[in-house]
View 1 (cartoon, rainbow, N blue to C red):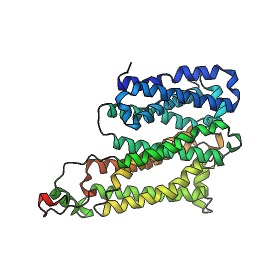
View 2: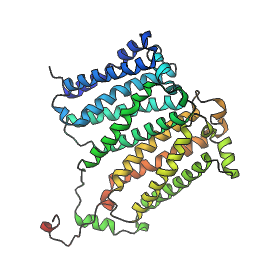
View 3: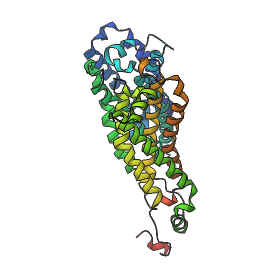
Length: 374
């Protein structure tokens, strides 16, 4: 019997609690290899359930992806709640034998983000698929968030203090690398929801000088400050000998010295990837017709939002060793600085979505209507 699309899609995520409890109670799964094989078996079973519940919506391959990942998001939420002491007896064996790095502050934070934000995005996109609505913008935000999360997590595990404790269960992270690569190509190929704007309106918007667009001026200033802070923190984790860098890493963000390596990897990704993007964004806000900016602003908005949540939360979390926690006397400056850092890309994405005329390819208004699409 075929289940309704959305309620049926929720079935795998609702199985997260009994599945986690059953695996945790099986002492035979203490062997890491057996634990990995059990995980693969569970995923295979879930895919079978998705085929049954998906019905006609399975013609969109993202339906399967989002339903499957909604299950892992539910598991991640259980992990974070158990590691923070709110519940117990569900994933202790799974984490201890297969994923000990999830017991770090960073691991707990990315589980919270995946279990709340990503899960909400999956439900929204599954609903959009069932109603034949466009979910491209949500998908791009999710893509950036997931890519940032898995890249920092995997690199931190490989080079940090837990590199010697990696088990075969670490290979269960492989779908999180391969699927986003595939999903990115598919999402960018989906048709955009084009605004109903006349060529005259687009031309009028693109003729405006920068001083005639005070919101863009303010956004450029925000991006310049964000870029400068990105460069500074990159120099800090690269052990710049300047006094300001030494003072900052010991008195303001000692978490950057944590041997788990997640914060260092995060700052280097900011330096080598996010910083150049900020510079390109400034270029796109000055010169009209940069049609790539709305899509990529969503990707980077998701990436920075996830990264800042994990970094900020890990800096203050009790699982972070005390010498690397943010000192109480700089809490407010640390919170304000990092929240504002995350806010810049969100404002850029919002500006691109709400007023897209400046970024559309220019169409000569003088051409007859019949010749505009030739």
